[in-house]
Every structure is written in structure tokens, then in C-alpha cells.
Image 1 (cartoon, rainbow, N blue to C red):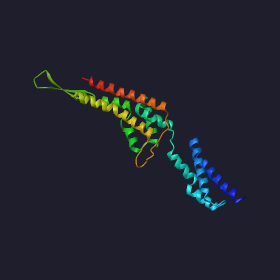
Image 2 (image 1 turned 45 degrees about the vertical axis):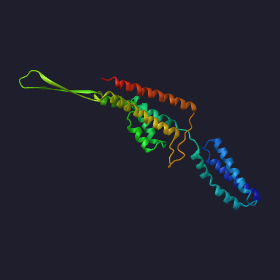
Image 3 (image 1 turned 90 degrees about the vertical axis):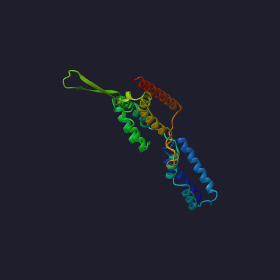
Image 4 (image 1 turned 180 degrees about the vertical axis):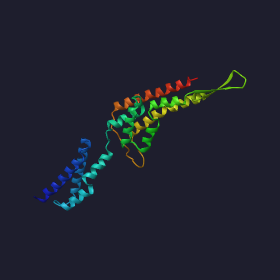
Amino acid sequence: MSEHMMSDRIIEEYLGALRDALRTVNPSSAKEFVAEIEQHISEGRTSLEPGDEVGLRNLLERIGSPTTLANELKETEPRTASGMDRVTPWLILAGGFAFGFGWLIGLYGLWSSKTWRIWDKLLGTFIWPGGLLGTFYFFGAISSSTVCSGVQNAGQTASTLTCVHHGIATLPRGLQFLAGFVIVAAPIFTSFRLGSVLSRGYADASNPRGIRVVRSGRSRTRTRVVWIIEGLMVLFFAIFVLTLH
């Protein structure tokens, strides 16, 4: 085998290993990436003597191993969110209405996923447990209640009845509105936060590329409609709080 043919074989083996390492990457992106590396190799060979295997291997080493190159490409490639990741924010928000099981499934999806960081997981767990269903229970717990006690003085048949009112209805109307808005908006904000991370990811010093998710325009439009509906729910609930006596 001639030295030129040996050099071509080394390159083919290198490119073949690169293609194997890129099997999980989008085919069109992988093909374009391999073509760029092949062009880079061709340009580098112009400075080498024909049949210089040592120089060729050094060139390939400088370019990087196929595995390293593939990993670098995967880090910059948009990824497709898993089905579980996509439904998790909605299960955290409204899954409690499915007898609580939906929220528990969302909680499992949240903690088992690598998409969200620990503070997102804590937020989704504790604000509020049960999602919107938990909001109704929480609101019921702080709703108005009346405790009455009677005191009968000696020698009297009538007793003095003293009633003490507790709960959100005892607050000024403006504070009632604010409390109702916060209670309902909290789980919606939590779900919005989880969905935002799923869509755009993090963009900070620790992860400048963030987590980019492939989503269709139709999906984004549907998401906006859902958030508008939920915003109206918050408004109507706040108005309901204002009508309390």
C-alpha cells in the first residue's frame, strides 16, 4: 500500500469514527459538521509532505478526537424536550385535580429531570403543594371564621355572647385583593418559571449556552393562549375575593 493511500485510510478511519460519535445528533447538523472537519483536514494537509503519516496524525490530534468533537457539538445543539419534561409544568399546576396523582407524577418528573436546578425543584414542590388545588385548600384555611363564646353571670339567665372573627375577610378590601391574588398567582408563577427554563434554559456565567429546546411556533402559540386563560383565572379569583363580606 502506498504512503498516499495509507494517509487517506487514516483520514477515512478518523471521519468514520466521527460519524459514529455523531449518531445521536441531528443528521443534517452532523453531516455539515463532518464536512467542515474534512475541509479543515484538507487545508491542513497542504502544508504536509505527501505520505507524511506522523504529520497527519499530529494534525488530527490538534483538531481533536472524534469523541471530543462530538461532545462539543452536542453541547451547542438544540435538544428536543422529553414528553415528561413538557408536561411537568402543567402537572405541577393542575395535576392536583386528578385526585392528587397528577401532581405527584409532575413532582416525580420535576425531581428526576436534569432540566431544572435545585431551587426550581424546591419552588415547584412547596409553592404550592397540589398546585391550583392546593390553592383552594390554602384559601379555605385562611378564609373567614367566627369563634363565639358565652359568659353567664351569677344570678342571670341570659348569657353574654362574644364573637371573634378571624381570616382574610377581616382584612381591608385592598389587602383581601392582594392576598387572593398572591395565593392564586403563586402556583401559576411557579409553572411559568418551570416552563420558561424548559423553553430558554439558563444563561449565566456557569452555563452561557443555556439549555435550548426545540419547540415549534404552533407550540409557542398554544402556550401563550394557556397563560392568557390562567391570567384571567387569577383576575376572576381576585374579584371573587373582593366580593367577600
